[in-house]
Length: 254
Image (cartoon, rainbow, N blue to C red; front, side):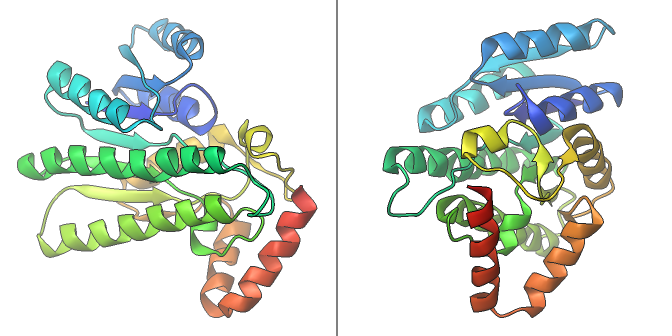
């Protein structure tokens, strides 16, 4: 079995790679940071496991397509795609840097969209395979002071929901899941310039929980009881109130 994991150089992606290797998967890991990928490769291969590295900057469309082509040429097909690469940004929409936001949209949306489409087409042809899109609990919410990030995660959630329904109607055996965690102890906070008030779950726990649930065909995967409750509250609370609450939560992070 072969799994491709994007954003595998740190955090959830790194720990998913470790766990999938333990479960017997051969790995293709991708990110921009070659040094960190090589460290992970050396660590995993100590146990005689197979790891292939492909360096890719997924905020560039041509890099996404090149990653797909390289993987297909080498391995013909994969069994699991984990779209994990992504980042956030916090601040007032009129003040946050436009170029950073456009790069975020390219990474969080266009890369996930591109890789999901290309690999899904192949999976449907052979009627097998899985895709795990790493989203966020913010995918269910409105995010003032993190407007662009929340919007990107809303996109990924809705895209995944639509694909799930299409696969169901076509009676396809291909499965798609979406991981929607709350705060996780990773480098995300530093990149996004935020400080969460809630205690974050460990990336190791989230990675294992997500993989286990995805392999059991769970669609929406939410680690932690607090975030499960948050999702329920979002479903029954008016959007205007959700936006107000999120604003005050975000303001405390900055």
